[in-house]
Image (cartoon, rainbow, N blue to C red):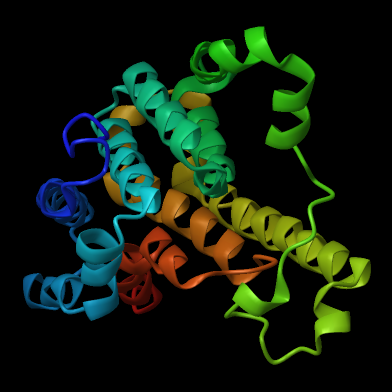
Length: 260
């Protein structure tokens, strides 16, 4: 991007690039909606009506936009049963922005159901290998610092930037009790939805027979979308640009509620 924008001086060129990224992202999302066949065509109009999304892509130029592009592309590959290349693309999305880990529980469930334990281990190994290759330049130069900062679970979030828990007093927001409570709720809801899906007879038959051809792409899409949304609901803090993490998933999730 620095090369294409003259070391960041040519802002207009950067905006043109992000317009292209926006259109590619929207195209992939519409492909997923077509495969899921849940949302009526007219409701897809809502996907292009958010001024904030336009701002995040074409004015703010956040890297969140590139991360979600790779994330949606990975989901599209999963629905086409291209598991290994999908894991490569998904791992690249994590390399751009770690919020893509919110997809991980749903992807793990999909892999286990559709490919079995052995292939799931292979796919997870692919993800780990991609992360190792991406981190190599930093691991060689400053290994301890890179690992420490990459997995800084003791990080204290800044209250002034949060938008989802702003109604809490600052001392409550920063407390360890809130952090632990949100983590526990996240795990509980993920387990609840995993049990809910796996308790269905169709899913059990697919898991036992490994006949993923019978698995509706809607299950793959809904599982990963729900996993991400659970993480969003119980996130310790959200900033305005994080809206792009889940905006394009909302019509699908809302219409899934209407299905018996």
